[in-house]
Image 1: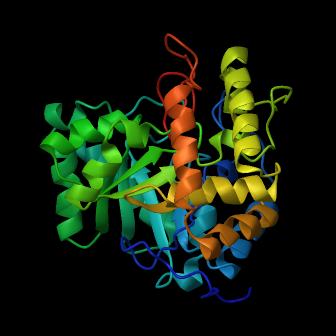
Image 2: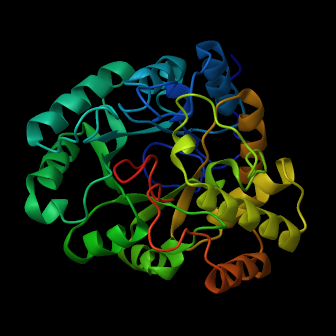
Length: 342
């Protein structure tokens, strides 16, 4: 396998030397029980995707024990083993599998990290997120953060973060607690990071933001439309037809406004939009093939989208809602209805 490219210089200062475009590892975990994944994945293709990402300078890898019940961690660990000093690896605690209840106890956290270290072939983990906690968790269970910070002092964990259900939760958490990084939904059809005030607050507190769902589950790239049929096991099968319509129409509006074609142009614009938002250090598209790695890496070379285009997208969102009214059982802030976030 070719070495890691240095063409895409990292801007992110958390972890080891992570790139500003990352590798979202949910899809490579493959199918899990129910509709809780992106369906079946060929393991050889997943490995090729990781190798292609490394070759293109993508060095920030995000995973979780829940992604394929450890399969995503195992693949990332095996494929990046020779590059441990050059990559940033992030994983999560609290949700071991989508078919299991969340467990944020001290014992579960320590056990989860021990298992992740083995699967990832590492002595330490660059970022550990609390996975999809209720906003009040850290008030009710102060041992969650104290356990992670104890592991941080011991050198087992380098940065402590929260993978938020919604950006608003990040604001609530920062009012009373200290963390290093938040992972939150952000894309050109979901700017709650901005409207909630989290982007400004995080910047003021020196907290890094990692932007997940930058392609809005495929709508902004154009690979998913209102007529798309999702495969067995795909979590997107749970969405209402109304929410699918809103996202499909919204993506078309964005493409027209920015004068980009679905595919490569739309992908690059979407990733670069996220990089232009205050506080964002890494944009985290899901990658499941070598071709996706190649296109996504290009956004790192191009850098943030121009200010005028960003302002137009924000203004569009302030005038038009792309969320299903009165609550959507498959909210954009979750991976499956009500309970799970990326």
